Amino acid sequence: MTDDLTSLTIQDATRLLRLGSISSADLVTAHVERIERVDPRVKAYLRLTQDLWETQADEADRKIRRGDAGPLAGIPIAIKDVLCVRGVETTAGSQILRGFRPPYTGTAVSRLFEAGAVMLGVTNCDEFAMGSSTENSGYFPTHNPWDLERVPGGSSGGSAAAVASGEAIIALGTDTGGSIRQPAALCGVVGMKPTYGRVSRYGLIAFASSLDQIGPFARSVDDAALTLSLMAGYDPLDSTSSDRAAMEVLNNYGAGVKGMRLGVPREYYDVAGIEPGVKAAIDAALFILQKQGAEIVDVSLPHTDYGLAAYYIIAPAECSSNLARFDGVRYGLSEVDAPNITAEYSRTRRKGFGTEVRRRVMLGTYALSSGYYDAYYLKAQKVRTLIKRDFDAAFEKCDAVVSATSPTVAFPIGSKTQDPLSMYLCDVLTLGGNLAGLPGISVPCGTSDGLPVGLQVLGPQWGENVVFRVARAYEEASEMKAGVATPGPSPRRGEG
Amino acid sequence: MPLSKDEVRHVAMLARLGLEPGEEDFYAGQLSGILEHIDRLQQLDTEDIPPTAQVVEIASRLREDEPRPCLSQEEALANAPAAVDGFFRVPSIQEET
Image (cartoon, rainbow over all chains, first blue to last red; front, side):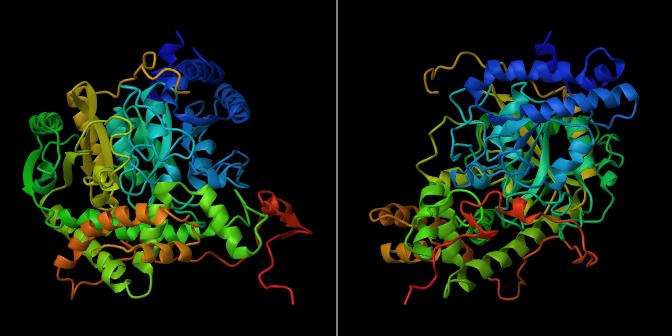
């Protein structure tokens, strides 16, 4: 019985809650039991938030009884460790923020709380959201629920794994170069990155401010769309948030793909390193979309080969600036016994930052340093313009762009950690969407070697509804629902 | 363009990363590999291309400058590793004379 409650969608759970068949407290109990059973192996959560779920479930149950419950009343949610929640330890997966308890809650999270969501805990991620496997967490790696010896993707790997293993109905992640869509693909769930500016970043611990966006993980396109519609919209606390109507993300998204033109960028379709099994799953998905009445058109994104290079200047440059605030003075780890302030900064940051963060801070500092700014940073910003223009031209010919989300299925833990560039290449199909500010989704589209494959749909800026429309039509026609994995006993027993 | 050990040391100093002796080689090797990939950007002629810093057209919008509730001093200092008399405590910036 309790397992039945941990594989529900929002729609399913809401029906049961409104009928009075279950209470929010029942739903939470089922999830907590599930977490106790599977999380010692999956390790999706960094911390559980019992005080919050008790208060929030209680309030949800009261409101449901009174008949004034919000759209997410009683729905268990997991929150990535980069989103501030008042009083809840929030560390960005980093030792440098160990013990940090934000004095406020970020806008996206507080909007979902107002809608009735019940927070179960804080999920693991790559340190400061830098990575594609969650192996860069300053705490421990998360394991893929479909194969515990493989990574869940990243950086929002904990959130993806939590939804995939029945440890939450929905989760929040952030996506700077693919950090929602890629782990969604590798864990077989739905993951959505909105248009830059759609969701307020207030209360998000910044990585690369011109690229970061908050978005949902879910078991269905409907759930992702609903969750996004509740987070979206202007926030006076984020001057880059848009005042476009939040509900427009749902416009007409159930209309099906008949008559739509779906572009397949040849550079994405044949991207270097794409696995044959992934390609086969994408071919099958394109066939299904075509059968539903979509027209598949050939498009080109000619600067694809330069995307990774531009991204790995822009994102590290922004991160080197954003991470300057971790100085051991105002919060987090501090080496207070240092003889002078420079030594205090250096000792704090030496102790608090992991290898990938140090690598990117150095890369960014170098790209911004005197004498190299034009050659690297300015050049990358110009190439960003070219990549944006590629997408503009593609969207002249099609309504949405479809491709694989990740060139590969989930890879073995440890297989890419020694070679940063090979890890960066995980995001080769997703980071263009961030550079161009586009909305994008990954939906499950079958398996390769028994591991989930994700189909990515990218839309023009502010075209979330178009993205949801294609994804939902595919989900419905393919009957490819996000499954819930029950991980067996870990073959790496004893690891922790 | 490969990064020398000296450049790694310099950049780490600028970013206050507190690199330990011996780590320069590790990072010089890895960063050089990444920069080698990044150097492909130089193949593109971008002479007439404007740079993009903000990819979405959103007009900068300022809120009304009105007093509103904010964090109390106690809340603002709650996470401070060291606070004294309502201030953040840091080591002295100048040597005592």
